[in-house]
Image 1 (spheres, rainbow, N blue to C red):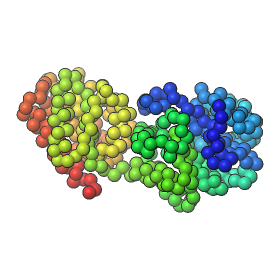
Image 2 (image 1 turned 90 degrees about the vertical axis):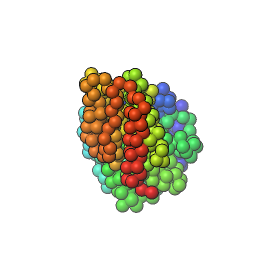
Image 3 (image 1 turned 120 degrees about the vertical axis):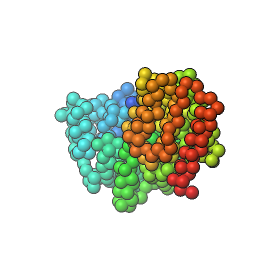
Image 4 (image 1 turned 135 degrees about the vertical axis):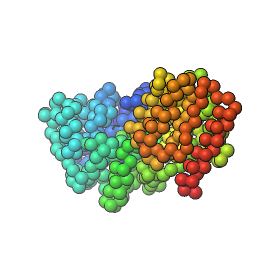
Length: 403
Ligand code: FEO
C-alpha cells in the first residue's frame, strides 16, 4: 500500500472502498467510495483526517511506507463523522502526535464519540487561526453545518491547497485520484448525486462558505476532498466552485420528473399519459418508478428538475409505502424552487392525491394545477385528462423558468 504524492511533499494516504453500497440510506451502488486522508511533509509532519475504522490498517500501511507513523507531529480533524474519524483512535495510538487540531464543535463531537479523548493532545482552532509547520502554514476555516456542526476546512497558501473534507466530494471508487483522469460526465454525475443526497439541505451554508472563500481571496490551485477525486489546476478548481454554486442556487429548471409507485398499473398508465402531455409542450421528462429506482437515484434526478409529479394509488386510506418513504427522504433534503403535482388511481376511499398534494405543499412546492385521480383503471377520457394535466404543468413550468 503506497502513498501517492499529489503535489510536492503532499501525499494521499486514504482508502478505496469498492464494496460499500449504503451510506445512511444513500445508495453508493454501483461505485463505492473513497475515504481520503492527506499528509504534508514539512518541519512538522501533518496528517489531515483519517478513514473509516475498518480501513485503519490500509491507511497506516500507506503511511508507514511514507514515514514512520511516529513521525507525524500534528493531526488535523476537519470532521468527526466516522467515515473520516473512525480510525482516529488507532491512528493516534500509532502516531502519538504532539497535537490534534479540531474546531470548537469538533471538540464536543470528539468527546461524544471517543472514550479515550481525555488522553489525546487536543487543541481547538477557530476560523482565522493558523499554525506554522515549517515552510508552510495551515489556515483553518470553520464550515459549520457543511455538513455537520464540527466541519472545517484547511487551507495551505504556500501550495494553494484547500483540504475541504466532505465539500466537493463524490462517491467514486476507482484507481484514479484526480478529476482530470476520468470522464467529466461521470464526475459531474457523481458530484450531483453526492450533493443532492448529502449537502442539499445546507445549500445556504454552501453559498456562505463560497462567499467566505471569496472574501478571504484564497488563491486555490488544488481542492482535495475527503471522498473521490482531487481537483488540480485553476480550470478544474473553477469548475468545482462553479458547480457547487450552481447546485446551491437551485434555479428552477425546465425539466420534469414523474415519480410513482403502482399496484395494478393504473397509476403507471396515468404517469405515461402525463409524460406525453409534458413532452407535447416541449418539456423534457423522466419517469421513475419506485420499485425499480432507489430513492437516492430519484433524488439525484430531482437535482435537474423544476417540476416533480408524484403518483400513488390509494392504499389502506393512505399511499403506497415506497412513495411515503421517498417523500420523507426528499423532505429531509429540502429541495427549493420546485413545482409539484399529484396523481393516482383509487378503488373506493381515494385519499391518495389529497395526501400527495399535502406532502408536496409541506415541502414548499408550488402546485399550479389540480391533481388527477382515476377510479380503478383509467380509460380513454381519464388518460386524456392526464395528458391535459401534463401539458398544463409544462406550460406553468416554462413560464417560471429563465429562457
Ligand atoms: Fe464523509 Fe460527513 O462524512
